[in-house]
Length: 365
Image 1 (cartoon, helix red, strand yellow):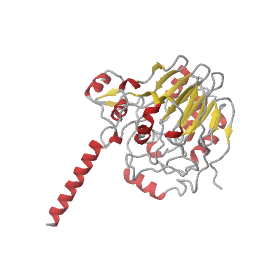
Image 2 (cartoon, rainbow, N blue to C red):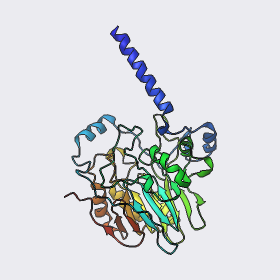
Image 3 (cartoon, helix red, strand yellow):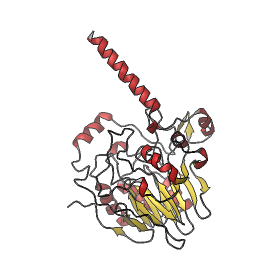
Image 4 (tube, rainbow, N blue to C red):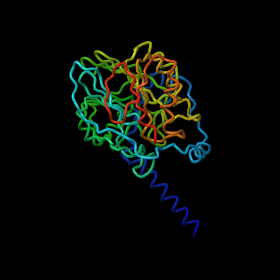
């Protein structure tokens, strides 16, 4: 009798899990045969999966990772509430420089040539497929919401992981955005969430698109991966963005391990006035897909950047290091290079110009 009860319980749980992963809207859509056939001729697509330009080790010892996460790092999270500004939406004239507002992790708002570009917006409480579990955002004095956003001319997405593509944010955001620019395949998620196909542009690596008369966007490679469910790894593309305006050129790196692609991008599209580069959630176990801060420093030089801003830190704990280590290690490693390191306060808007902006707001008293 007991065995029958256990078997029955396992069957019910298995069915519930199966139904969840088939119906939960936050998982997004599935890349169908039509798209797969379209991608088949690409050099970086093989047997239904996208591949990195450079061989990339994705194996991690799960028990070792779990043990380290539970036992290492007493300062993985901030001890108190992080100071953050009240974001104030404002219009810019054609004569001003581009401006950038960082909302923590990799979410940034860029105003360039009078256009508002929102990149990897995650304004929800968790970077997770679940509303009740998964990485929870740090406590800020002020969390920005979608309601705080101005009119958005374009949303740019680097890849479809939950800490870069958030279902709850998109539900609220979709009617405030004119166009969406995403990697190949990521459009299936947006379509499932009710965004019309004619508002979605899917781009391949090195593909260029004229967003406006003054702004050209280029989707460039990164060394990472994709996936939102159990079986959809590598089915959509991942990458980085070049934003080429009338007066200034910006780079958004998304998530990436270090590779020669940074130098190729720098040689083809640099120098950059401002580069936003991943610097956080790194670990020896996944060093091929997330840069160490010293590699971030090197990447900034490869890109021929005048200013480098660390992103992918300051909001979620996704690794074992002290939450302040990314910026402190980057500041130290970058001293041998000629660019400025920019560390803006949370939710504060800064102009893109050659200046150092480091207030050490992250230092806990």
